[in-house]
Length: 365
Image (cartoon, rainbow, N blue to C red):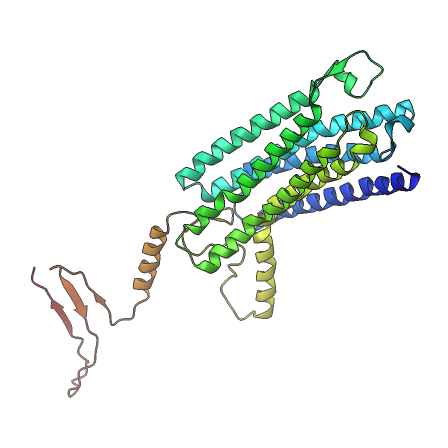
């Protein structure tokens, strides 16, 4: 590659990861800030996402470091110290990618489980998926560490040692498993949402929120495709694009995982705007909750847990009965007593009082 190409990749590997990390950080901070609009504290998924964000910083830092150590140039043209640093940076990126991705994915699964966990099948599948993601991350981490003997041989070829055969195939396999996990996390809630007795518009809205994870699948796929050009003996010239997709995959996953939880913040802001425009309204804005009108149960963190819609129908009927006017009939069929109250003024000469007539009828069994 020419010097111009080297400068191009140096700029790309510096600017893109830093911007991605900044956007991921802003998303996570807004996620935490939105908790002010709810009565619940931080949930376990918030802590998991925070750990994933911190680990992504480490991967980003080593990607940026490789940008200043001859990335894009053939490794044979680099001084020994730069060659060692860029290979060490590539080795360290692998160590932080899998754990960071695992914490982010498990955070999303835990959130969805809390939202849809009343569906027994989804709760069971979620637990299995969490276990699979954890095993995948541990396997990827351990194999990445011990793929060469001694361990330092990966980035210091002056030592006597060797690496396992099929390194690139292993990286592709780990990337393929990661993509499968992303697709499962994306698709798993969809049939449950469309099986709920809610309106078509509500199904579309909830599906769109969950479909944000499709962006993660795209970046994960691009990273997997780029491994076709990955050469472990010449990481300087072959790992530039893979490093970019690695950072973007982690950052986009964090952003997509945080966006649904910003709904209380957005609704709270809109609620303040509405209250400022129409101060005459005495009731507080209810816009600080992620609202699923039917088939949901309220949680104290600003969200509603999607569950059996029949219970919400009974609650709705109770409210309708309470709002009936004084002319009402409580009717129960099959021989049960029916009470009818009629409040009226009888048209008769007044003796100082109006008469309130109550008639009680009993239906025969």
